[in-house]
Length: 244
Ligand code: PGA
Image (tube, rainbow, N blue to C red; front, top):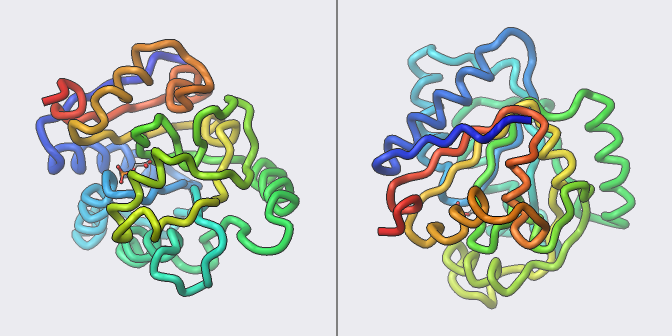
């Protein structure tokens, strides 16, 4: 366990480049890698940067396997709000990740029972090499809503009013945001060999400071990155860091 490496950048374009450097370093290391890519707006520019690097032959994604970070529950498979679709559009398609290299979270039947199997299988294949994460204004990672224990497993969860309000900007209104979700647990995320946490915009100022400088605990799940097993890089833009 080491202190997170904090990189403060001027703007979104710079955040995308610094984030892409971290991802490229992991992906270009020898051997297959398992990557968890967050959806949300913050990493979108970084994924575009990675796609451009791939087009220039600078990274080879053939060895990349993807594990889904989180998903809403209660949606039809082709619902426009499905986070799998978001991941498909921003990550899988632009980075040419083959279907057989993608592991979806369970969303049907007894989801919690399926999540327990999911965690065992993920452990058995060696866990996660790189978790790319965004930060919720309530301190969540994935949909590990506060309070979430550092040892929490992959599971279903009720979204908090904060998250529903924040996610309304993706889908139109709060009424369009599903209220239940499934998320990789903090235990699996904090066990990743590398974590890349991306934070942008003044709306994240208070929470990024709390996560990195306040007490570590369940009320701010992202604070647990300071106790992660692997190395942690936090890339924060100046608006989020300074609150301007
Ligand atoms: P955002 O979402 O990147 O769209 O701000 C972050 C999150 O809720 O985890």
